[in-house]
Length: 283
Image (tube, rainbow, N blue to C red; front, side):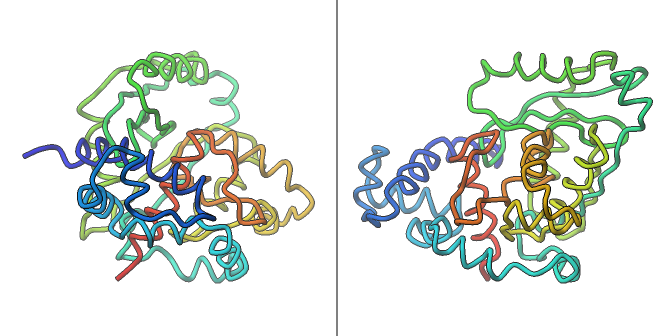
């Protein structure tokens, strides 16, 4: 049986082209045939491939990416107290994850991970290749990329962030952890994240973790949540410095205008992740 994550990865490479095209031409509301022709598929095969990956039709998916829809979502976003009561939807594919975040100690921050063992590798995911690094206390890096030639540079980044840690490539352990995140399960999965940041950054990342699946927030929303309403620019910087994609969901933060702004792992991937989450909540 073919690895489901590998299949999702392969589909994503094609779907990403379609999402980028749909995002760039959303005001024109392009017909299915036009998008299919753009990525070199027949109408039938494109519809089937897209629905298999996203769970909804291209037309429905496009609705989630429009500025008008995003602005409505921002206006309807509950305050943090309400959001915490909502929790994660059991019907969501990100669904059964309970994210727990821990920060390194000031001493560990200064010593660059001395005496810390970090296992890392890359594997397929529904959003392209996924690079993950983890300690016994939690995942300390999760990044997406499109070409295995980038793998070495990601290892170099990890080494520069944790210069005194012992780095061990462990493909089996990382594959198991990535499967745990992306594969549907009927059991609640607790996933631990280990972050290395300032007190302010940690507060921002905690606020992101508290956003329910498929919820969109603006930078101002996050600043308000951490009771620093005038620190919008600092919030944006903290979000940009997030090293743990998806689990610390910085992709859910967009501009107040409803525009999907820059994303560290690619604007198209950000759109894909937002649409994928929203489509997964459909009954």
